[in-house]
Image 1: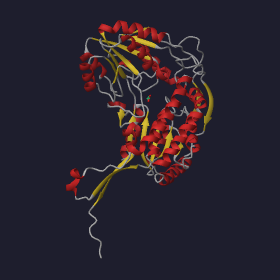
Image 2: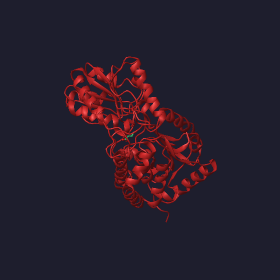
Image 3: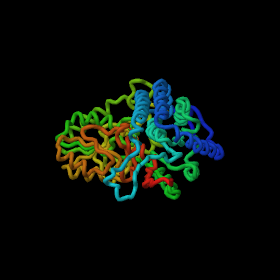
Image 4: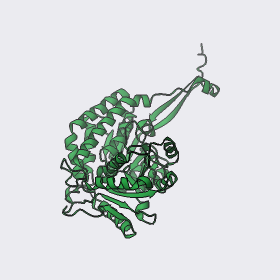
Length: 469
Ligand SMILES: O=CCCC(=O)O
C-alpha cells in the first residue's frame, strides 16, 4: 500500500509520500535511543508540563486536525473533533495521574522481614524506545492513548502509522515537538509494513505495541517473541450486545445504533452481534432498524452527516462480501445491504441490519468493519452467553438487563476484556482497555496501560552495617 492520503469520499489521491530509506530509519532509531537517556532523567513534573502543553496545542488545532483526519479516512467531522478533544483529555489525565500510578512501592515490613532486607523499594522504570504500530480508524486517539502514558513513564516513541493517514502521523510528531519535547522523543516513521520487522529487531528498540488486525498482531508478536521483547496487542473484536427481557428496550435499541455505527462502524469495540431475547426481539428489531434507516449518510465534512464513507476501497469490498455471503445463505436485510445509489466514487455503504444469521455464514465468525449489524434471537440467558462466546474474539461486550442475577452471570461468563451493563462500550483514560482470546493481550489506558511500558524493578537494600572507624 503506498503511503498516501486518498480521500475516501471521492477516491482521489491528495498527497503521496516517499517512504523513509533503511538508513534514515536507522538514524531515527538512534535518535530515539539517545533521546531516551535524556528523557528518562527529566522527571514527572517536567514531562507533565510538556504533555499539558501538547494538550493545549491540540485543543487549538482541533478544527484543522479534524479536517485532516476526515479527509484521510472519512470519519464524520463532528466525530473527528470529538476524537481530538478526547486525546487532549487523556493527555491531561496522564499528566495529572502518572506520578501516583508510577510511584515507588514499599512492601510492608511484616511481609518482607524474612527477606533479609533493611528496606525494599519496587520501582517502575521506563523500558526505553517503544515501537507503536497503529491503525487508521482513530488516527489520533490510537496513538495518543499509547503515547501519553509511554512518554509520561519516560520512554521514547517511534510511530509506524497506517499508510493511509500519513498527514495525521506527521502532525503528531510536530505536535510533540512544538510542545517542547526533546528532539527524538516522539518520531513518526513513514515506512511500509515491510519495514516493521527490521525496526523491531533493532537492539535499540525495547518493546512494541500494536493495534490492528489479527494477522498484523501475529506477525509482530512472532518477531517480538523471537527477540524476547514485550508486546501489547489490541486486535479485532466482534463484540456481542445482549438484550434481555428486563432491559429498557427502547434505550437499548437507540444506543445500539450508536454502538454499531460510531466511526462509520469501523471501531474495534463497536457492537457487532446483537443477541436479543425472543420476548423483546421484535420490538428491539423494529426500533433498531428504524434508527439505522434514519441515519444521514453523506459527505463527512458536512456537519449533519452521521455516516461517511468507509476508509478504504478494500474495506468496503470486504464488508460487502460478508453481507452478500450472509444473504446468499438465507439472512434477511431489514434495511441496507448495498452501496447507496448516487454516491459517485466514494466508498459508502448503507447502514444495514441482518437477521436470520446462522453459524455457517462468514459473518458469524468474522469481524464486520463497517455499519452492518447481525441480529440473533435467543431463548434464554444460557443461549445468550453461549452465542456471545461463540467467536474467536473477546474485546468487549454490552449487556442490557436490570436483573442483578443475570448481571452477575454475565460478569462471570462473558469472555471479553469488559462487560458494559445498560450502556455501550467506550474507552476512557481511567479504565483498562484490551481483550482476551484473539483480541489480543495486555492493557491500554489506566494504571495498567502505563505500567505495560515499564520494567518493574526490585530494589533490595541490605543492612548497612557499621562503618569502619
Ligand atoms: O478501535 C478501537 C478503539 C476504539 C476506542 O478506543 O474508542
